[in-house]
Image (tube, rainbow, N blue to C red; front, top):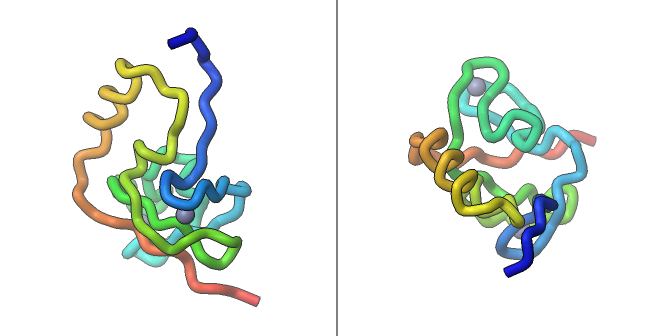
Length: 98
Ligand SMILES: [Zn+2]
Ligand SMILES: [Zn+2]
């Protein structure tokens, strides 16, 4: 395997790529971009292990482990991130706002 430090982020199920929008909602009501904070709610600091692929911007609505969204991480970093995400919970997608 060639050394490649490039990391891409996309849904492991449908390959939807986060567009920088605030598509996730925490149980505390906070709506934010979970990939800006590595799955930590900026309001209540809760860590979300699972991340739902948001259907509103074109995702598949399937929850996947947050770590699985990152592609190109080397094994060491992957392990560190796994350890940092202990909460077995899924973050839901934000309600559609028109
Ligand atoms: Zn929260
Ligand atoms: Zn998806």
